[in-house]
Every structure is written in C-alpha cells, then in structure tokens.
Length: 114
Length: 114
Image 1 (tube, one colour):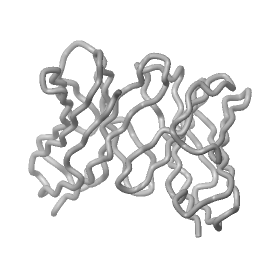
Image 2: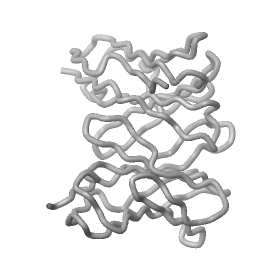
Image 3: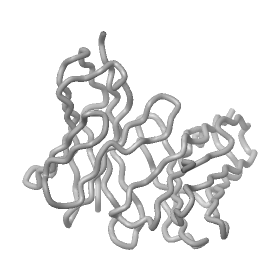
C-alpha cells in the first residue's frame, strides 16, 4: 500500500539559513510526488510536483525538491529561508490508477527565527 | 479564475447534530475530493466524486456521506456528530482526479463539535 512519511514534525531555522524537509514514500511503481504548503487558516497550495524526467524539480517561492528512487525520498529544499516561509508543509503521493486517493504525510511545521 | 470555494468557513455544532458542508470547484474541474485534517493525523481521504459518481471512499463510518451535483458542486454531510469529528474539512478539485493532476484546495470548513 502507498504511504508517505515525514519524519520531522517540527523544524526551526533562522531566517537566511538553508532548509531541507524530508519525505519518504512507499509505492510500487513510479510515483507522482507533490509538495504542498499550508499557511495558518488557509488551504493547501502546490509548491512543486514530480512526474518523470529530471529528478530535480523547481517550484514556486524558490523551493526545489529532488527525487531519489534508490532512497524512496523526495526532499524539499530552499537555500535561504524567509520569515514568510513559516507554515506547514505536506508531501503527497498521487493516487494509484483507479483509486483517485492522494496520500499525504502528516506534515512538517516550519518555524523561522528572525 | 475563481478558486475552490468552501462554505461555511467556520461552524460550531453539538454532539448528535448533523452538518452539511459545501464545495464549489474551479470552473471546468469535474473531480472533487474531500479530506479531513486533524493535528497529528495529517489529511485523511474521505471520498472523491467525478461527474456525480463517487469513485472512492475512505475508511470513515457511514455517518460521513457526500454527493456531487451536475454542475460539479459537492456537499458532504456528517450525521450524529461526535467530539472526534472536530476538524478542518478540506475540499479539493482537479480536472480528472487522475494521478498526474494536481489538487487545488479550498480554504476549508473548520468544524467544532461541543
């Protein structure tokens, strides 16, 4: 069965520091992978997605993620964090054919110190 | 282009009552999914609709139901509310619901059960 694990519940970084949020997935075939961000009181916004091809994908707001099949990982990175990046981040796997059910990780809450 | 609209945004109910939540998808999107979000549990899949047909349902009791109308708008209903139903209910739309499509989320309906 599909699953997504985000091992870090909370992460705190200083503004200007680099960021890496971890995501591991379990999936039988080539996964369709997504990173979403949720600001307080808001819905989820797509940051980036991976379907195939180049394993390093670029997203909005200066984020990037790298798909590593050998490690079953899809970690999110940003070279320099801004205070406005404080939010909750969710990794997700697209649905198996015919299920229409996306699987989300439990999220990583990012706090940014001024 | 208008985003996904969910109403009401906030509501408070008491145990035993029932509630109906509404979702209007992005124009042209025929797939509507519902997710329950609670702290520590992440997003749990409730159901997915396409062209008025429920194509999948998550592991929730029968008290949770939904439907989709011919204009793709969707409603979900929770009957005989329990304290544990307190959550943020998120609606998401996509063109087809297939694994290559991103989900577009509404801001959610926050339900508090007293």
